[in-house]
Image (cartoon, rainbow, N blue to C red):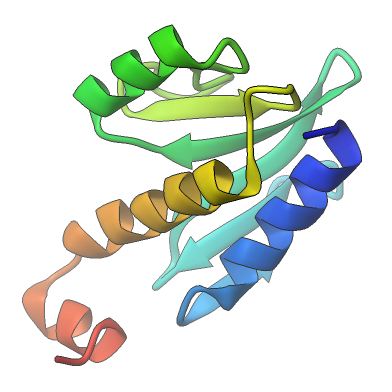
Length: 122
């Protein structure tokens, strides 16, 4: 997946997630996606290379970093709980969609039960 497709797909997938808010609290160079006020995805550039920062399970993050060269520890984030996804031939739309969905669910899982029930009705 090339850089332009990476950002476009990430933005599209994130906005498809329920109750997603798209904002720019850190300036125009950072596209931030939140659920219930908590960040689950951040789009920016590092040294001219677009990247997608996502929350991730620490064990899964390590495994993905070993399998996919375009996935690294989260740039400018907690390296244990965040990953950065860069453009590369190893990144596919289904993989990116799964990573974004997992990030959204990880944030929602950390919210109070009453809020989770509102965001994910049974």
